[in-house]
Length: 272
Image (cartoon, rainbow, N blue to C red; front, side):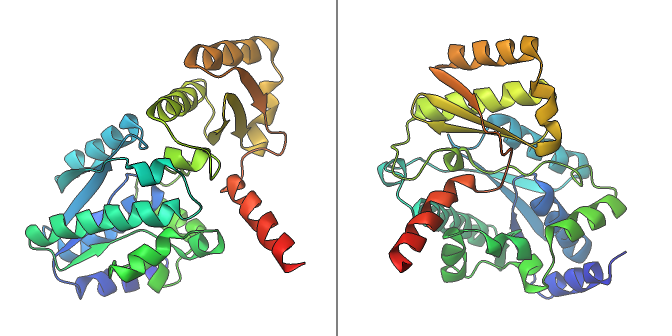
């Protein structure tokens, strides 16, 4: 086992009673395991319920905590008009509201800290939400110890965690370009499209929504599967049924935070 795991457990053990922001993904499940190893029953998992988080993801998180007998609370987060306007600092606005509510819930349950699964690789992307975590005193043990995503996967596999090879997933708001207004219909359409593609065997998938146009991203090593006329026709029909008028494939394939490219391009234009 990577010696960082022992350091992580020791680091968390010094925190007393904690709540873990828990999505059921690779990072938060690994962090929850370390917290339970460190503190036993003095750990609570908190999972957010919101229109921009698919229900199946919440149900998967509930299944894991139930299997291991971990106390688990659900926290309803509204989608506000400010978030629906979808500014470039949307993630900050959302995280600030979400973690403020989480801190209040955790404090009421006797927790000393709220922990988040941000890791070292996360800071390489445009992540305005990290500022909100810092402002609210949210603890980021994986980042503190310089633990990277690949290390999390490797240690998760050694620990026997079912999420060790789970594909990365982000909230559905990240599928909509900044400045394009968000509606509940958009979120339902995107969530339904991604679920359909997952049900057809695609593991790493994003459906970016540009108005009535869907831009499908799949991992590069899965692109070959789309060179199948029958499958393409099925995907096209399903996404049109969900409300998209145009259904397209991004030839570059899946890449994290591809909608942040516009921000980076804008910043470069300002520099030059």
